Length: 138
Image (spheres, rainbow, N blue to C red):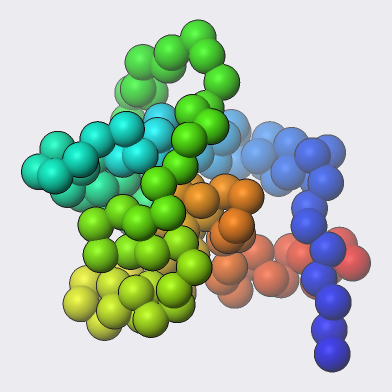
């Protein structure tokens, strides 16, 4: 069985520099949007989740747009995370598969990025590129 190591901060910084800082800027906005999902309920949460899904789709695009950054609060990310957001549950893979099946173009690479944004201590971004980088650095 293959064992994969997480990228170090230095390796992430090196890759980020190769892309002109775009990945860090986009992921920062994704973190802010994920915090908004956890801080809202009902229709407001659905709208926040919609915006987060669009940001994740842009992050995973081959040619992402580089929008102006979202205003950033001068505080750390919110610590409180809801276990369930809309129809997604942090620990129930069936809900992740349902999202992938019900949302055209939202396969494992995008859904894993969405889950990693919503629950960073429980999920990681998994796709062909991240696996290739991890294996190359191992």
